[in-house]
Length: 526
Image (cartoon, rainbow, N blue to C red):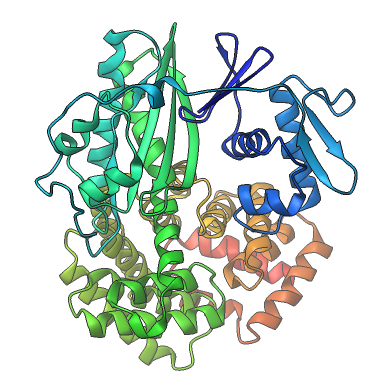
C-alpha cells in the first residue's frame, strides 16, 4: 500500500518515503510511527497507542516519543509550529491531518506469474524445524536498471552463506529462496511453503557511485516485524562492498533472532520445556549478568544437558557461568567450582568441534579457569573460522588477548564485535574489555570512560569497578578513585593486591604491575 500526501509518497510495501523522485532518509521506528499515524488519520492517536504499535508496549520516556514525532515532522517537511500535516492535540495525542490518497503499491498490484511450487508439499505446510529457521528472499532491485540485478543477488547469496555458519540456525538454501525472485510474496505463505519461522527481505538501490540496501526481518508465523535497518556504501570495490553489506546485515540480525527465540521460549509453559528452550532461558539470565541471574542460568543449562547429553553449547555456557562466578568473586567452593567449570568446557570442546558458540565460550572460560590463554585463543580463532560474524567470539578473543599482553590487538577485536552487534545485550562486556585494554596501554582516561559505560549497565561487575578505581588513581583523580574503591570493597571484601593473580589471568608482568599500582593508590590493601 502507498499513501500520497503533497509531494510525498509513503510506500509501506517497499518501506520507503520519497519526495518526488528523491528518497527521504528515515529510521525504522520513525517510519513505523509515520505509517501508524497515516493509517489512523481518522482519529487522534494517543501516546499509549503509539507505545503499543511502535514500541511493542515497552515503556519509553516522553523525550523519546517527542524526538520521534519531531523526526516524523522533519521527514515530511512539517514543524511543530505550522503543524500542516501532523497536529498535536493537547493532552490527547497526535493526528495526521494532511490530505491523503491511497494506492496499491506496484509490488502489491502485480499479478503473480505461474511458477513451480517451491516444494513438493502442495497445498500444505512444512513443519518448523526444532531450531530457529530463516529464509532470505531475493532483494528487490529499485535502481530501475536490470543490469544491477547481479549486485543484489550477490549480497543475498553472501548473507545466506554467512547465516549458514551459525550452527543453531536452520537456513533455507539459495536455490529454494530464489524461486520467489521477481514475484510478489506473502511472507506467511513463504513461511508455510519453506517451513521457516523467519523471513528476511529487502531492497537494493544504486545511484551513481552509491548503493543503499534496506532489510527487514519478519516473523512468518505472525507477520510481525522484528527488525529493519538501512545500509549504504560506495561502489569503489563492488565485491568488498557486497561483503561489508552482508556482514552488517548478519551481524545485526543474528542477535535479534536469538532475542526473538528467547522471548518465544519464555512464553512457553515451564512444563513443556525441551533442551533448546532450557538453553534459551539460561541465555536470557546469563546476559543480565547479576549473581542471582547466574544462579538461575546454571540449572537451566544443566537441564538442557540432561535432556540432550550431546548439546555442546549448553556445556559451554554452563562452564562459562563458573568463569563469571570466579571473575566476580561469587564462588562458594573455589577449587571445586573451577574444576567443574573446566570439566564442562572440555566436554563442550570435545562435542562441539564445529560449533562456533561452544568453542568461543569454552575457549574464553578455559583461559580463565585453567590459565590456558594460548589454547583459549586458538579455540576462539577456530570459532571465527567457523563463523566470522560471531560477535561474542570477537569480544571474548579480545579479552584473552588483553590478558596475554596484546592490548592493541584486543581493541581491534572489541571494535569489530561492537560493529557487528551494535545493540548486543552483552555490550557491557565489550565495553569492559575495551576499558581493560586501554588501562594496560596506559591510556587511563579512555579506560575510565569505557569502564563507566559498562558500569552503568552492571554496577556489580567487579572487574569494571576495579578498572574505574585504578584508572582514576593513575590519572591522579584521587576522590573518584577512592569512591570507586569503596564500592569495590563492598562487592568483594576479600580482594587484595596479593591475590590479583588468582583473580584475573594477567600474563604480562608490566600489565599486572600497572593494575596493582592503580588499585594500591586507590586504597586496596596489600
